[in-house]
Length: 271
Ligand code: HPA
Image (cartoon, rainbow, N blue to C red; front, side):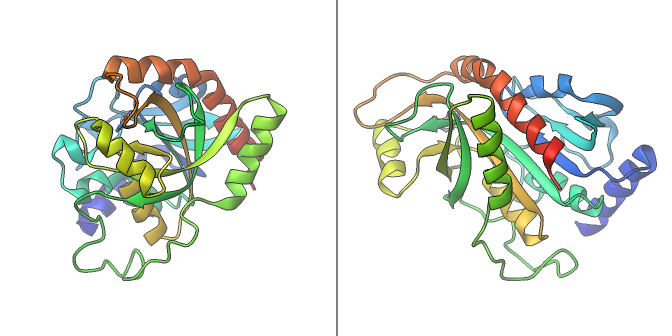
């Protein structure tokens, strides 16, 4: 596996000939953020050795190297989900490539279902923590010592400095930004009313089908992680609305301008 990660990183390094400072992963319906980047190189996943292909509507399949607010970023438009059938080592493959490219900061985004009664559809929530309820762990198996330790500290899964910076940007721009705990489930079904109830009961504020494996892998390698989630639907025992993928994409669209403001501000000001 590590050999493949190295080959992919070398391939990308040869093309971009530079050291990006941030990797940004775009979640469901958040592809518009890519229009904000002044592209220098755009690589289709299918042209990158060992890179898997995406299978979900609303997810692209491009790695974009370019400039955002004067900073060098590598943006992944379209991510790989466990529910698509990939083994965990494929789901987290790009994150390991980012590390070998020397990237220290990882910015993630996703769509999620809110169970916190203070949340509304199209709210933006910054992750302060997560609960891993995926059936498989990305670090299970022989540890890759070259990448990180066997037992990984998870006391600060989401970088406090970046969270504080995001809060500041949101306040300056009049954006209602909340903080919450994300619960990662495998999907691909949305939750039953009782399952949304379970998420809330265990201390979750929102639930989704991505992010957690990527964060774990990034922390293994000592990266700093920041993640924004868009609440695309609400769930719970008393909320019997149906959820559709279209609805998820619509809510994501609505929140997009604010997400763009926060991510741009974060990248611009980060030291
Ligand atoms: N549950 C799980 N994943 C999701 C949801 C949800 O309600 N909304 C968007 N992604």
